[in-house]
Length: 279
Image (cartoon, rainbow, N blue to C red; front, top):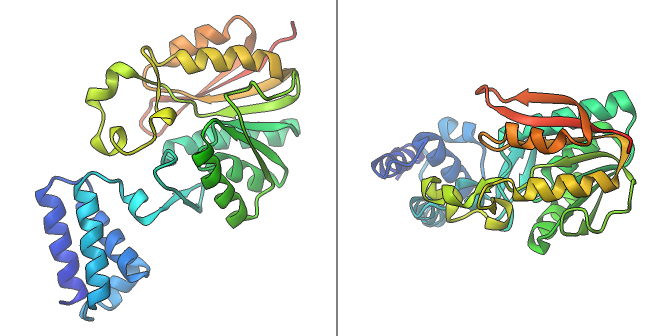
């Protein structure tokens, strides 16, 4: 079997199962089996697919058919132009979350913020990206020890100045010690479970997805704690869930000002920024 034939068969199998982006997925999985870049598939289309690679490719296709996300199969995901290791212990970084990193970087550059904290860091993609773009230290925390292990691997791989620690939101953070707080918190309401993609609902860590019955439970706790640990005049950037802008802005209105709302490429409000007022 040639690489071209193997690719065509993989595409057909995935399309029959209605797997999204079937051709791209087949290319990525075949490259993963061959340990090569996608250009290699076309430069060597008539090469024979050796047995060992064929076995791996077939296993990867079966895993994808079962609903396992491609990123968990390859254990790779790109974020902010860098490749990050991911596994089922962390949320897969989304392109939309790059807006959160961009907003934090822009604020830190113009304000000179030094004490920067990423809460619920997961894979560490945000913290690593911010630290490397700013060339300054960043703190990052998570309640999940499995997530912190993944984040530590990415910090080491990218030689990023990121200090990791375990904690439930901001309970382990000193009062009025943070200049810039960043977070992509869990914000999916429990009632939305039935409508979610299988790849997300059945494979990604629930602690990183679900916030409670309304989807605002983590926002409420995080904002209340942020009012204690962020310095007056310090800033916070939060990723927003679907239709969560009004509810989050209402929570912030009591103690925060200078609101900034950033929409993603689809036009949905994706990030909200706010500055903590003096008591």
